[in-house]
Figure 1: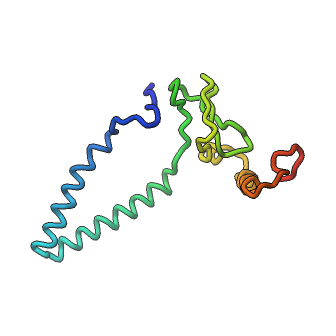
Figure 2: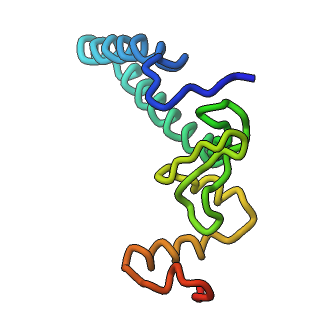
Figure 3: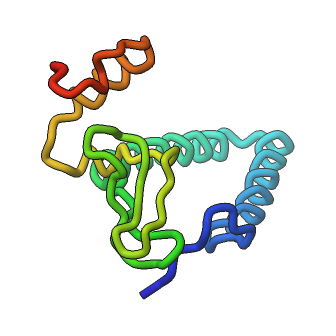
Length: 139
């Protein structure tokens, strides 16, 4: 099993190696468009940009993000929400690691419960409503 890298790891991922060639390609394309001014090259660049935007939107819709349940400390798949009533805070059921400030929104989305009570509870907490944490308070 591939172990997750700890947060803040300075090593670049595989996608980072494509940044420099893409930047050089963009500079070369801009130079070619401004120097020779062929209309077909400007049209091709615009089509490439628009197709990248449409492709990104299709990928985001058809393959939405999933919650990362791999623990950054032990590398096992056992990360759960810290509190079932909140969308903030995660803990590992295998090693006991926890982070009270880390977002657990994607985990809450994957679970069958409605998200509306989480949102309403968060709004009331920001307003300072004391009834939020009181047992028996209505959601």
